[in-house]
Length: 480
Ligand code: ADP
Ligand code: MG
Image 1 (spheres, rainbow, N blue to C red):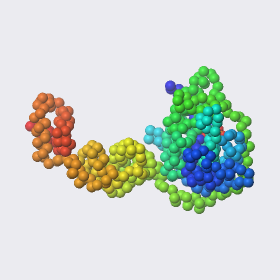
Image 2: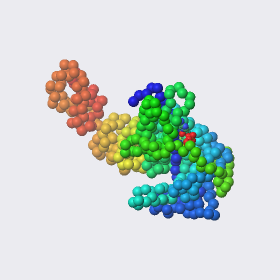
Image 3: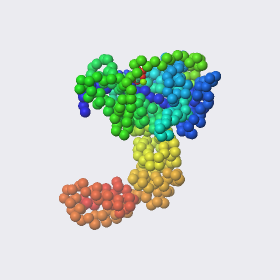
Image 4: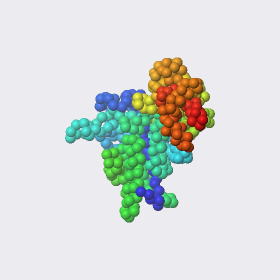
């Protein structure tokens, strides 16, 4: 449905679980899965007399993400207690950075139809995760597993500046790429290491005030975020069109029906009784710490994207695709360092190699093919010795694990194209003799048939006839 009267306003809250070895305030292992309630020491459970201690790695990871998102890294950092009761919260409060988020402002760039849009961030703060209530393990009971309690999280909050489900989709794709790129979170939404709540409202175009928002939770894939937003926009517009009011609600997404349903009305008087955690002293982050961390950061995808376009002359599309993850682009650069057919390298990576990896369910970090071997394959094609499809379908599978010499392998496989005229003239003659009617049609003016003849020569030569020479010889013979 198209409603030109309205515009959509979306703000996303993303929780990223940090890949630290231990939890945010205790030495418990920070690991997904495991026997329930096995990573729970007295600090995680907040037994009397225990004292939390800040995990430095978590702070470092927060700073890394802040730098990657152009945020201001705040010097003064405090932790506060957010008090509420819930069975999965063993302490009775969650430790979070209430008024002093570690990162402020910043943005993440997305590209919509090749035009850059900055999605502005409000803040990134550190907090701990809760445990898990499990409703389906024992009939009639709810079980709790505290293994996840105390896991370090970063909450990344955008300004209400996202305008469509597509923008939200692109933004989340970028966030996931970024946290993987700087190796702070595995970005796995299905396992819950990356979670998203979507705040959505609509308003009449041109209105300055924000409309009443709903917050949709339980979005465990980027695609579901998109579906939930599309569903909500339509639902809210229908309500307003019917003259009804939108109520501020928390809603949940049902992946079976692609719809959302209300779970609670917004708790107006929600009072978490925040106060500074007396067990955790405020701490300061100085500039030299930030500089040291900066030095450990890899080159970021957007910077590399520019480089691929300027240094190697690739299109923005190719550059974007190659920067999907660190390993892909580093394979490109390693190959480009050894041969200068940059566009061909990009095509091989984004075509046959990516397809191979997808089929194997692995990524470029696990690719056994060496850059030098790929260069050898590309050189054979450039020299007209092997055609692309034979190289992709036969030569590549033969070399991918062995990295044997491409030229010798192609020779042994009998797939080297013949470009000397005598052999090709022979095949051309055979084809012309075998198809007298088509030849007549061609001579009467149906020049498009040339493709058919070239194809036939390719067939009987088993792909060995160089297509360029074939075409020239065919045209010569047919036009005699
Ligand atoms: P809350 O306290 O309810 O979590 P916040 O003001 O902290 O609300 O905002 C949470 C998220 O909701 C942010 O990403 C913010 O940009 C977004 N947001 C706030 N108001 C609206 C609105 N009216 N429409 C859409 N998104 C909104
Ligand atoms: Mg919220």
